[in-house]
Length: 324
Length: 257
Image 1 (cartoon, rainbow over the protein chains, first blue to last red):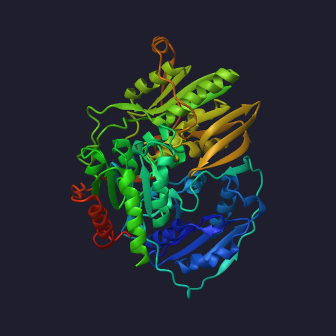
Image 2 (image 1 turned 135 degrees about the vertical axis):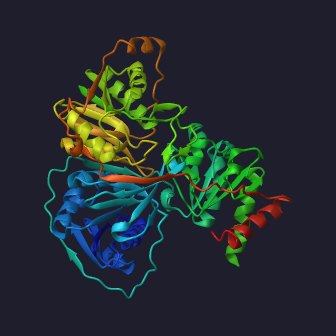
Image 3 (image 1 turned 180 degrees about the horizontal axis):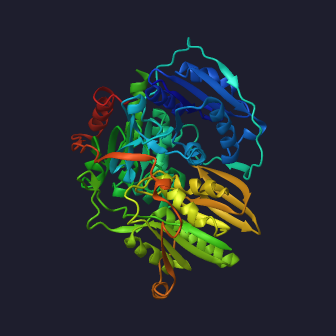
């Protein structure tokens, strides 16, 4: 059976997020030989349509309205439900982002459907698709399928590889006019607190500091290394509790769960709650003065030493390598 | 103000997970109130103390969840309700849970419902928003600040590290993010008082729910542990050589740079 799968694309400051392209790849998997339709919602999203096609969407449907400039669950659900009514899809794929997490349960409720959140892998395709997701903060995994009805999943950023970009691909971009009414939430302001540039949950490289960084300034060498590697800075709960950094950086069972290609843990002992937030990273490097630290048990590579010595040396070494 | 808190009993964060016979082994494990739900309970108590009213904690599960409800009562909640599904449901997913909770709440006229933004076991974060949608009330997830003035509500919510400042109104469902408050520990007098506070138990029959109507939409077909990681390599030798070797390994062996 050919399936029609809808992907919700997501833009951040006018640029599509990587997870949108990953969602297209996931949707292709579910669609089999069927069709992948990308949906873009906002006040001005038309121009982003082609990029969704270049990453594998067959066509794009946009919903534009001045009331959709900021995300609200009321506004975006009205827009998305209008598209669903037109398209009658067999499956939906969202990113497991702040927006996806907030919107998907509301859509699932309206559709009276199941929803498999935070998927990290897909096995099989079409009707046989089975979804892999971490439970107990990554201490275990489960394979889940939808028993009947619409297939609805959110995918965790950084886990499903996007398709190769093909700028020669073309596809139809159409728009749906929707009346957006009765918004019960009014967004007043967004205060940017996350580190400039790289989003922690989507970063390919994460440099995380623990109590061992000793102070707010102690994060500076980590930031420099992150800059050189194009990565993001994170922290353990210990570092946040000690006020060395904002809680928005916290990685762990409470806090963010990250799965970068490279995770460098500096001065982090490796409490089980911290491991829950990062142990599924592809490669883990531990730097700690204490050779007995728990973090070395999950690390692929370890250096026993003072992070204030090791991190600057690493930064210099990476700089050298990058020049060559 | 009529305040409800949705609470889930979960494994302690310290627990190792053991899988046997395709199921998570629960024997001997410590159970706690889902940590994010503790923020919700604390906030509910603070809102009640500031504005008056009553806090009811509500959970779905078996008899053993009474312990977590008593803890919430000891923290300061006024009443507790356990929707006991032990005899009626073998499988439950987020659809099931939300249908049952919303059915219980539909004639209770809640002004404010609080929940954790995610449970640390299943980790789906769906039930709160689903319940709000079923009750046709607004919801705001991952909040870090809540101010109520009459029926007007000012909220700060965490959006992947950034803070969104917004306004909305009651009735409302919110889900708590870390940073919302510092949950109190139950005091000894609190624990004594909790023993006398009302803890009601209802079953699906009392709610006029037919099991078939809340049948799970999803099915877990396998649970397994991640492959054990082999012990990593702790590098040796002069520190500058170690750093050089590490960069080489990341480039040529791990191929992540």
